[in-house]
Amino acid sequence: KAGVTQTPRYLIKTRGQQVTLSCSPISGHRSVSWYQQTPGQGLQFLFEYFSETQRNKGNFPGRFSGRQFSNSRSEMNVSTLELGDSALYLCASSRMGADTQYFGPGTRLTVL
Amino acid sequence: EDQVTQSPEALRLQEGESSSLNCSYTVSGLRGLFWYRQDPGKGPEFLFTLYSAGEEKEKERLKATLTKKESFLHITAPKPEDSATYLCAVHPYAEGGSNYKLTFGKGTLLTVNP
Image (cartoon, each protein chain N blue to C red):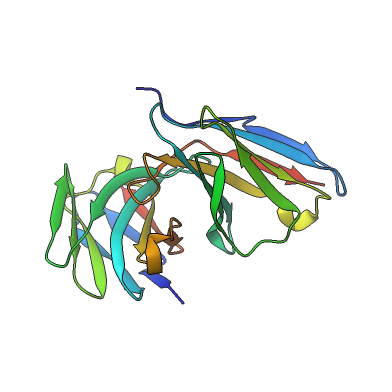
């Protein structure tokens, strides 16, 4: 069974730009979560989607948003990029959300 | 507020030298505790899920245990390929079952020298 896939794997943007990251969950998984990983803060929860509905949101500014499509694929968007947004963005999928989450390889975002 | 503390932050072992990693947690109620392994530049790889105190799970040279306040990841006779960052995460209960996020510790960087 194919794992979680994320595209693109690497991105370089400049301050003020916006970016969209994509995540395809494991087949049959309906919950998709997004995390930001930085050396200083570790893994921090951004939001979780299930059946196209956001059920949980972490403590991030409104510049961070996401959505989920009917096929469970998910996208996250970051607008007005700041230097501090440079991080590894990880997507994880699970069947229902309250069970084991499986992670994708991540998207490395660098903001210059 | 849910908290997860992992220790030590870094651990260097010789090949074959067994040791344990610690994960202490504070949550109002625990739905599950997870261990992941992460290699540099990659996403976390799932290792174990533990649900209740006293539970143990094993996989190759790794064994995870759970008490009411902490979890241990025991590594027996490690090999250089076990070098990675090991992450612990908790999934707390929430009123109405509405919490679907994991709270992670900062991880333990394990280096196994040949």
